[in-house]
Image 1 (tube, helix red, strand yellow):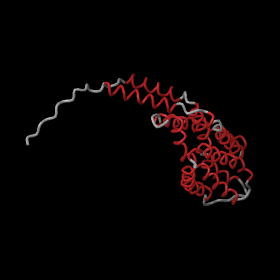
Image 2: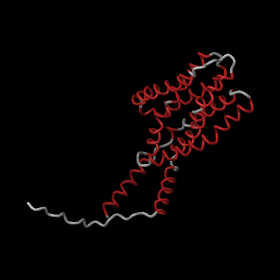
Image 3: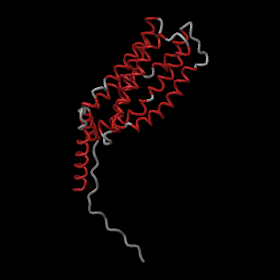
Image 4: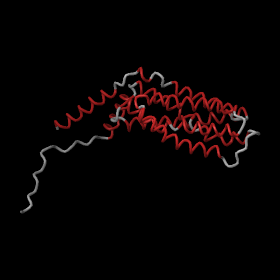
Length: 239
């Protein structure tokens, strides 16, 4: 049979937004997500976490070289950090699947363990203890890569996940740019890395404790996002 062309659609073509309209929409979405108290907690906690979570990777080899009773020529401590971090992501992932409603608590406990162990690092005077620290910190800090997205989704839902992660990455960049030189300055003033690890551990402890009020804040944004998506769908249908 001969080919019959389909009739053109009667619906009007979608209206293209100007640059200013897109910018205003992004600003409006930013204001909306920062009204969520849970996301504010995650944001501030992640800012503090990003400032200190890389401290062992940056300063542990130099700390070992400065200590007379420590000798790690093959940098085994850093290797253990990476290996334990990889294993931790798998193990904590299984734990989070088993206790999905308590992910925030798993996050708090793991970051607290990482902070306390970092504060105790200057008291570890033998290489096996330092290796043990590398294993513990690597396992505990891996929770950041496993649960971070879950906390964001529980705060804001899937609708604002991309924008929320952009905000978190901005916080990470600012904290790394500002705090890391300050941690290095602490070493320059004291001629050792003990104060650096004390400060870094304290920041990690504060980042974990900051999320303790998590269950007391209702997740209202999910309902708002659902209503907003329904309104947008209805507007599209009307067009």
